Image (cartoon, rainbow, N blue to C red; front, side, top):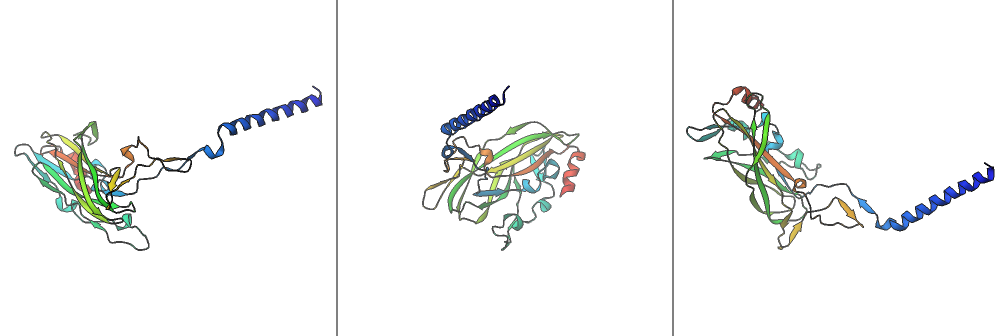
Length: 258
């Protein structure tokens, strides 16, 4: 092919690419492009529970159930109710450390277990009232291996109201849940969850809504109607509830953990 022909072919390709780019810019102008922001945590009420310190089945308090007398007893209660120092984790200003001390205060009364959760308001706004959600779930532990098996059996969700929690302040909130009744040789794994709500009420009576989308269009924040509760701050406490004749070989690692 003649050299002049190659020149005209090259110019034609350049012109085609230029026209294509102009068409793209006309369809999607820069000022209307979708800007993606990093996903951010909902920093407002941040709960804390023993499940953060003891996350696994082998590091959870053991409750022994006697079906004959229908009684539950927490093993090593003194060890599990020791005061925890949370200053390093929840200091608002590392330059000015706080002496934050929290005690679970686990108590069994009849067929229920109650304990304190640590809650801090990180919203930057005073909270007059908020309704946190309490959930429970029960799984079975394999009596031979100690591993979790089967589906989670969820309990009914309940509401835990709190009030008068100023910005930056923290408190302990009491959570109560029903204890399961395992068979004499059965071992169950109980999880008690505490989840922050979408909104709380400020002292002037207006709601503060913390449903935020991770994506921002045209430079403005928008509410996400399909906001997943899994994104909300949450905490959990876990317990092993065992029948009185459950194999000690499964429970011993748990007892050694405390």
